[in-house]
Amino acid sequence: METIVLNKLDPNFKYEIAAQPGAERFKLCFSCGTCTATCPVAEIDENYNPRRIIRQALLGMRHQVLSSRSIWLCAQCYACSVRCPQGVNFRDIISVLRHMAVKEGYVPPETVKDIEEIDVLSQRIRHELIRYYFEQRDKFEQLKQFIEAELGVR
Image (cartoon, rainbow, N blue to C red; front, side, top):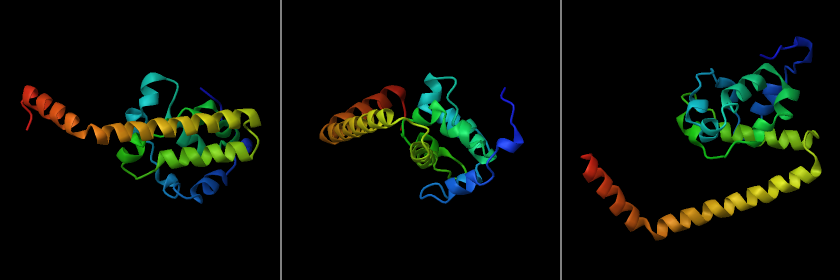
């Protein structure tokens, strides 16, 4: 467990985050853990914990949050944001934290370039998957009906 040194905390950090578009509800988090429980990344990497990231940011642990590799692991899938009982948009908060980390020099320029390339690639993959889904929508509906019939769901 990490020791929190009070004189190294930044009490304004949470306000800076909450002032950014999409992060307005950030301070409403009450640490229920729904974000971590629904996160596909947390399912794969037991050290990834969205609740911890939010908690550290709320406490003012600026350096720990912005220098953490965790802010770069979020898949940006919205699973946590959709299920958060407080309406905290974790995906947008992660985007804010990433921008802050880059702006404040926590990320080397060559890494920023790599991250941008990965982001462009992941966007293209997502768009292709969506396009494929809509092109094959009838087949998905047939499959869904078959599964529901087999399971006796209706």
